[in-house]
Length: 96
Image (cartoon, rainbow, N blue to C red; front, side, top):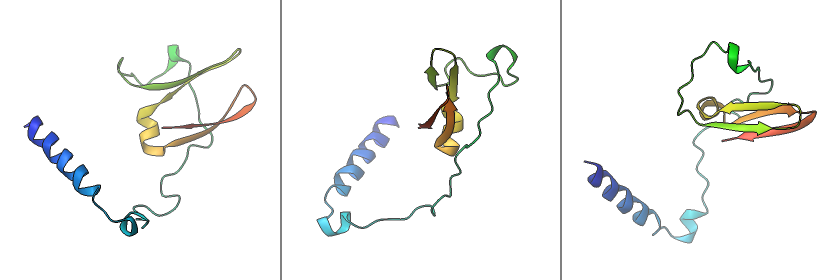
């Protein structure tokens, strides 16, 4: 089954590359603007007291500084795509 799906994907990609230049310049709107809300004021818990059990294989985006460490769950970022945060006094945007 896996090989059949891979073959279909290759055919779909090859077919998509045959578009004319005029068709490829067209913008397709899938979601309206701001349909996926950013996380603007993230709340963090110390790992020792976190009440959500995380899988050991869960992907994280980490920031490590001189005074702070942060871990951003890609599971959460899949639903929000961006976190606007302040890390060690500097604004940061974490995206996935």
